[in-house]
Image (tube, rainbow over all chains, first blue to last red; front, side, top):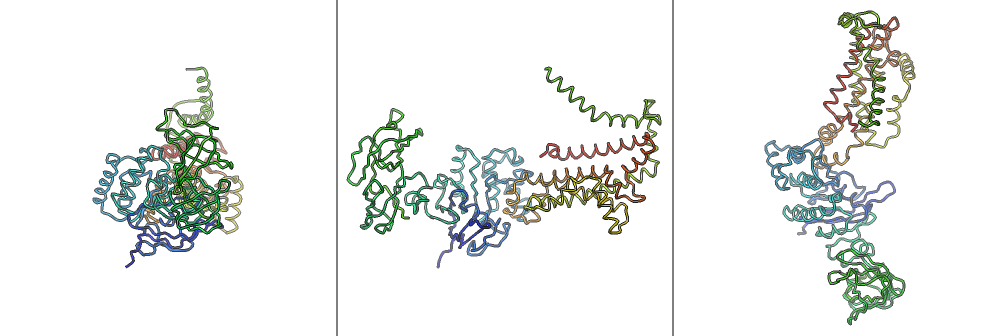
Length: 365
Length: 257
């Protein structure tokens, strides 16, 4: 027997006049997953979330929850709740009334509501805020109340629309950890929308990267970072050097690539199926590049000479932009832990860069 | 106190004096024991006593109250719906239709309504006045509601639906309570505009449907009697009560929120 996914999105499309917001998007989301929709603004991720919540109807395709179509069900009949970007707490109700709202709508008896609201407040560690109005709460507290309200009647799914974007950086990190633990504890499936790739990597079990209304890649964070399937994903997730060239030959999982202006390099343990002669790009993460005044290259490394073109001191690391022989700019990192001085190099210093043959990953056009 | 502040207080005092001195004079002379509004003779309640035995005046006051209540009620419901629609959908024609009576000169409104009522063969009376008042009150309510609604987070309605509220419950539990200050502000404006409207009422009133402003005008044609002062004072008092009552209930109205 085939195990059906908790949520199935099948060929869902949405157009606004001439603008294609979603173009035949299909996704399977398993029960208990922390699933993230990631992409730049305007990529369709929020549109998709609104279709799941029922605030909007798709022009084509189907949305199935537990194998049953919910595509045309109004929002109040879907067993899922949304956490809004600005929390959407009802300003004319107290915290307790806010949390009790979904229970009251479901027709729970008053006594049950009281008990469950008290329990929910206990769970988010704000038991003394029951009689407060949302205006009197801090951003982090509003966030927790919004989560308590959305979880109080145990939905099958929680949709989160950039819920941390309104918080400052310190609080955001703390809330990220809280979200991870919460999701682990209650085991409810989270679908999380964000444009922040760092947040997506930190939180998710799986990530769907979206661009221009399409899903570009769906994968676990490590694979997405290490093995992007396109220039777009490589560039969008983390920092990445893209070196253009074409495939010379492939022998097993070892590919020889002729990089424009740099010459031949070997890429080993490649997972990409290449055809000789086709255009490609070598994606190289800055932290995988060795940088020194003189690098003594190991056998499997490619070495290039250049000079420091620019640098950014970030405290823990310094980013060096190295200009190579053909004018190409390459970004590399050096951790500052071992350095007594602030920087190892200055702008204009001549340096050598090297990377091992399995450091890069090839993407094809 | 600094010199600047003194200047500020003096000029502010002069402005308030200019605004309120005429009103104070009306109130004072309504208690004056003399037929003439010239000099203070002594305190009396007698003009108020006379007022309450003046059948014409009482009838006009009653008419005004009925007209103001009915047209405020109707205009508030219609104006609220119009204000919500103006916010929810990108309509071009509706705002124009609803709001233009506000900008239209009263005299034009009065004449055109009169012509219309004659054309459809309607007897001029309370009903024609009410219809006229509803016409110009809707715009004010719609404006107040629309302003209130545009400052409301649209996610609140979606959140309510998302958490299990049907469209009707969502309206009753979320939209209506949040719009209430705007609705009340609009209704307040509608009531005060209706109760003291003269020009439009003048054109659309018939025989025996005189309102308070019309009645006062017909009395003033002869002379400004202390009775007129008394009825004006009462009208002022009513407005004051309504406004302070509303400000106590919904302070947000007066903070312009």
